[in-house]
Image (cartoon, rainbow, N blue to C red; front, top):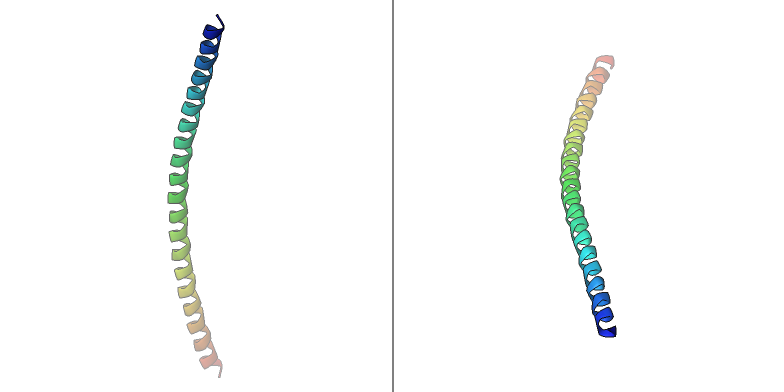
Length: 75
C-alpha cells in the first residue's frame, strides 16, 4: 500500500515537472521570438538614425555655405 502511494506521488511530481517544463519551453520560445522582433526593430531604428544624421550633416554644410555667401555679400 505504501509503495503505491509513493509511486502515485512520484508520478504526480513527474507530471508536475513535465507541465512546468512545457510552460517554460513555450515561454522561452515566445521570449526568443520577441527578442528577434526587438532586434529587428532596433536595427531599423539604427538605420533611420544614421540616415537622419547624414541628412543633418548635409543641412549643416548647406547652412555653412549660405553663411559664407552672406558674409561675402556683407563684406
